[in-house]
Length: 90
Length: 371
Image (cartoon, rainbow over all chains, first blue to last red; front, side, top):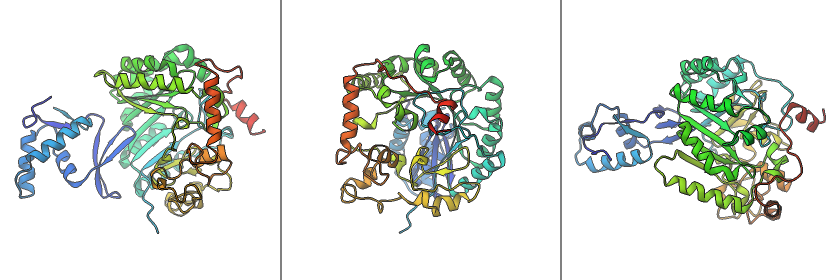
């Protein structure tokens, strides 16, 4: 298991994140499947591009939404995303 | 009340032509009349369905590689923002076309195998294709595609599940679909030879569970045969809820086997827009929601979970598409399912009954259609 705050997650190969206007949400597409994402999941996954560490993603989100204390929520979601094979590490 | 959401899945059945003759094919029995949409028709269908919201697009058949405009259709689907899936036997998928499809933006290839052995693969498909499929699997990985191996499971190969999973590992598949045959169309005709026994099924489930604990296993989707379940499947996630199938001649269906249902006129994309078809046609509205239900479904507390099951199965086993799916133990027609299960158990393990399999060939199709 990677050290979560320092690892640099990216969307897994063969997965695609895109905005779907008809569904009014971001979705994650993969072979013969789709996950509809809520706003916070999408905000995190949009930043999973293999260049930002988990800690950097937290800092960006806290700035963007003028809040603090998101580290636990982000770590929790990233662990879930990794279990689901949505993300991998650059 | 209008709660109809958009179609999310477009299954483009480009042709019913196929080099294989699988005895469990879900294509209609009378597939052989040959009319097919032109390239321009398909391009319009792709655009209209995407505008409605469809985002997963499967190119299927028959064998979609037999359409020489496949690359054009994949390129347009990719440009429109679909996630593009090719569902193929691998026959006709040579290096040149694999590269061209990659260039067109194809996202994923689902390759079918009939078994882990040459003998059973070639017998069930009535072709000599096993070695070719293995070569295609290697080429798919070489070209960097994700690969789903799809194996339809039934009495004649279910005891090979361990070797089938091992083959998927060896070929580098990301996903393995062990799809127990669903008994429609050709599989329904051949059900006595194909339905596994309860003992066979239990052994296969144990094998799958063992593999799932191993770190080297691919992701395994195991579709159990619904005959062995006490409640019906939530067929197509609801009639006209997310799936839109367009058949080779342009007929639009809420599922790929619905054409068999009597008393329903399904619309054709040659005559009507995809929007009209999805939202306004009798064929798509008839079994939406639960207003069409009768007892025992109407008052059932579980009706929103399984939506009454499958309309095609209700028609095939109870003779009435508006009946409860006879898989349900609350259905008065469950006895027919139990009788089929009992015969499968009596027949013992593995050995096919004496009656020959009927293979999916144009000749057999014409004979069944009385032509």
